[in-house]
Amino acid sequence: MLSEKSDEELMVAYQLGEAEAFEELYSRHSSKVLGYLRKKVRSEALARDIFQATFLKLHKSRSRYNASFPFVPWLFTISRNELLDAMKKPHVSREALVEVVPEFASPVQEVQPEISLQSLPASQRKAVELRYQKDFSFEEIAKALETSPANARQLISRALRSLRGIYGK
Image 1 (tube, rainbow, N blue to C red):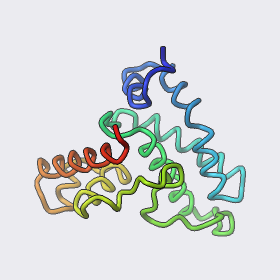
Image 2: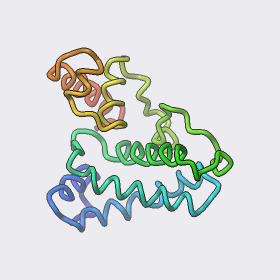
Image 3: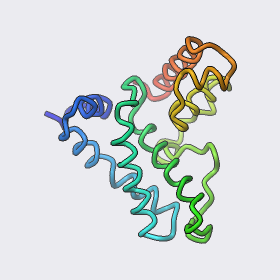
């Protein structure tokens, strides 16, 4: 039964082609994502546009999801990035926004304030930001951090372990 599976298990099932798994994830989290966006923008139409872009990006990026990383922060990172992208568009005025989104603020902090990338060492935090916020490959992360791809993977792995400790999973 899909309702008994964790978000991470559902995302893996979705990666394997189970459309019902996406439907369950959508029903669990769509109202939270839309609520977050409504708090950030004044325009309902703009909030809905960003909302749609968020789930489209989730669909297009599903193959890049790593089940060892918690799903909800990944989803809200996509949402925040879509919000930031919308802010860059010339037809979106600053007045349409309720507040300017800080560059590295995590929307998940609004849902679960105890969770923070700031608790990670700087190299791990930067590696996670490049991987999950900017969709960099391990080779691109290695180049940006002036290290090897194997070390970039190690940094991500250690960061994810730390974050899982924060989540209690």
